Image (cartoon, rainbow, N blue to C red):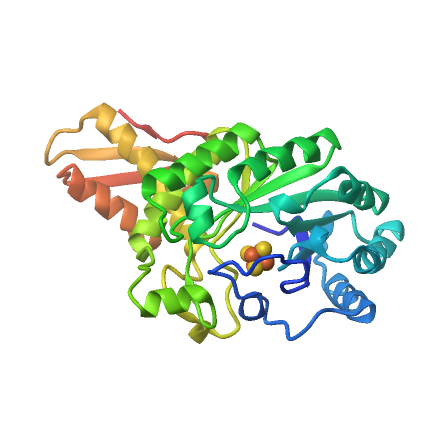
Length: 334
Ligand code: SF4
């Protein structure tokens, strides 16, 4: 599908961070080697704008990789002024940024309003306080509830980022976190299964045997359940898994995969088909004819037909035939 929206990332690695979270190494994730100057921001934006395909109707500038509202005010103003120039020229539609939940107050939000920031994403990671403590986050779930109330009260679009698989996390805690996030009704969500990156405290915990990351299968399965909660409530999941890293040797262990987004969505679709078949109760050795939504065919079928093979074996079927159809939900053709 042709792109209709692009986000121009401007990385401010670890800027404004009050704590060093055990899993985080923004230098590796962003591939940046320092903080951007105004000229760097302008050049980055111009470079992206020069390559915007004609299908794109909306362009955002996004400050990622740090705790934006924790940065000293004069620097925030400098960054925002550089971005806002493009909004004023009509070349960019909006500004978004990410920050910590405990770095939000009315004064900070007034500054963002001054520069027409539209969306604020909170790095939440978990709603379980024991997981937050083990991850060295330095805030509690209460900070998230407070921050979301302030953000919504000031009319910002909001985003929540969650990270299943942190130290002390469990499947139940990850799903509880997704449910709590849904209760707060952000506009967007991101799911980043936790991976062990080089140079983090998590790497030391992993090497000492104190931490074991999720394997790929667990991460896909848990993330699919989280994804299903967001989509069922109309919250758009705009990212699953880390962006492809420049140097994949930065990943020491854990569920890093460049196709993580597809794998999670495809697992979610498989779960939908599984429920459908469980309800239909096809006989052993029978042939099932499925109509699947045309727009999500690939996700329903799975990588190398993986979903179809799984279901065929799970229900001991002779075969599964499938056809793309103009439907929102899959159904069984009698
Ligand atoms: S996770 Fe966020 S708050 Fe923590 S160190 Fe990384 S950028 Fe800073």
